[in-house]
Image 1 (cartoon, rainbow, N blue to C red):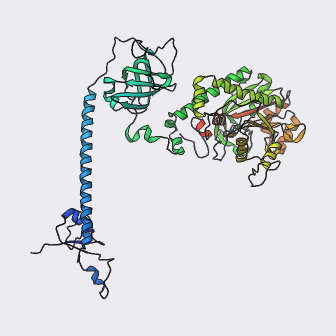
Image 2 (tube, rainbow, N blue to C red):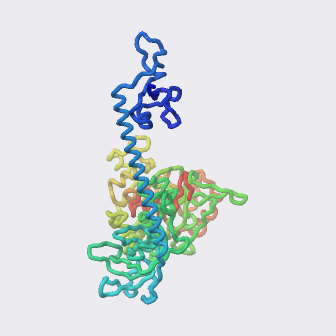
Image 3 (tube, helix red, strand yellow):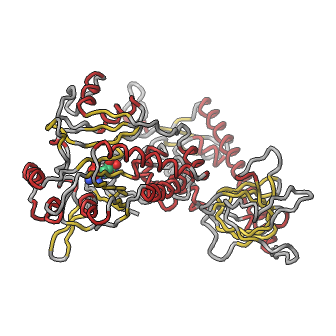
Length: 575
Ligand code: 4AD
């Protein structure tokens, strides 16, 4: 009896094991038929829907089964061979993986039996932070004759690597980083074999110099003799490991969603540590200059910088706003406290997504009494440079600034001073157009892009002064020599643009009232501000500096969003 052939219908057949390959249940490909049933059979094929109809035949010719061509058979045999090889390889790999898994389970089971015990004959450990280098407290051993101090440290695993059965950890505690060496049994415990980044550890051991040619923070390493990972201290691993959630390639928006984890990275933590030092330095420098610190309210009922950027909120039965600036309140402190400053949050309902706008930012503001405009500029320059000196006096902070901004140099004093009218001329000469695409003219608000281009080209701090009254806030004093302009200043920094805005204030009651009228602001709710001009006025002025913008310049960060803990801006109010 002739052998029953296998049928292949390239159009309606199916390559799946439930097909028998007989005429009613054909396969789809010859390759599959050969792979599943071998090559020593008879195979018949057709394309029942799309097949060519030989000339002179009718459509039913498509349904005719034909023997397969030799070339097609050869191709199918090769395909079947390749598939078989591939399956064998996969099978081998699976077996290998299973063996590895079983081996690892065995090793882990063995590892579970290792229980570390602290050697009570060793010297009592000294508790230190990871940046402690106090020679009174700590001595480094040389690994041979000189013994190092035995210390107890706490920290999280920042990085880890294994080399010939020895584990090298970089531990992090927010104060510094320390290299830790786990050798012998210490590297073989279950905890060591399953160690994940960010796991918290308590480690005891002797501090030693790093071997010649090796590098580690403070040129030292901790030779651990005992450690503990307390319950709950282990960090997630596998898919959930921190390295799978935030990395250099993660999108900026995701990094901000995961800011609580991003903060553990070196860049974010350095910026925030510099921020702490800079904020502290402002306090120090203001104290040197005898300014007193005050704390004005955040909930207010008056605007300072124009209604467009006010956040309103229901306040019991009234309406209130989040403050845009504490300036007006600072002015009220001058008569009783002398020069004053504050470091408070300001809020701007700006719907702009630029890299220098936040909805909530830290505003460093000062107000000085009995001064003239020149005094204001000199003070501002002094404060900014002294703040840098004080911050950089701390070696860790200096190192972090240089890590983040290797080209950083102390700004040259005096800062370049440039009048608004000169800036307009400069922009025209340098072909930098205004927002309407036309050459700048007197009265134009210099837009962010033009301002930044100018600052970047000039490439040094600039005091841009004497802005026209129409484009500045109502409270600014007019220049007595040129009534078109005000005694106002913006400090511009390369890479960022404006970081400070300040001015002399109108100190005459009538002139202030006229300014309210010009700006169509009802002065009634400003009675406490206008009263200052009724009860012994004085020539005074002040400024506000955006801390995040100052840091973006100092730490060379692309955006102010990376210079605060949890940035708030248009579209983001989390986490
Ligand atoms: O120029 P501004 O609006 O000036 C004032 O608020 C004055 N009342 C301050 C004063 O004289 N006491 O803001 C001052 C500074 C800007 O130069 C900028 O550094 C920062 O505050 N700033 C912002 N920073 C981040 N995001 C925003 N949306 C900001 N708006 C202003």
